[in-house]
Length: 165
Image 1: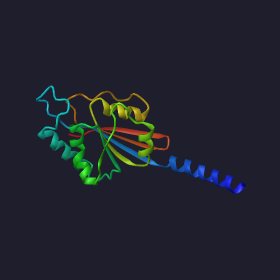
Image 2 (image 1 turned 90 degrees about the vertical axis):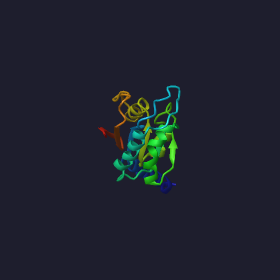
Image 3 (image 1 turned 90 degrees about the horizontal axis):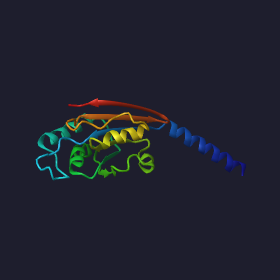
Image 4 (image 1 turned 45 degrees about the vertical axis):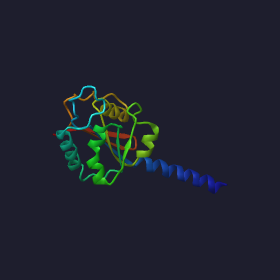
């Protein structure tokens, strides 16, 4: 019985050590430029400029090996993520923009490198949820070039905001 108890304590300590030394990295971007010609279309595709930006994101991320790529279930976010997903041979997964950084999402992505494509409001909200603080405001509607990078190591969190033209 003592051996089992000692093994459980050892396993618990190892598990805590592993979690404290696990690096999780999130890259979050807003979708590229969308077609605004039909104001009633709630699910527009990307414009030609937007499609070029999506290709550019794939170039920006060419040296990043993603484990998962998440988008909302809208044409513009999926089209933005598609070139990077192809480069990483990954299927695009969907997240609910009304349920950001849930316990299930956090557990599934722990220790992974993840791209998350969202919207002008959901992307900074997602970042804030991960950081557990209201650091970032909604993205200006003309800005499609923000790149938020969050790194988690145990209880430590670091973040940076870059603008990619």
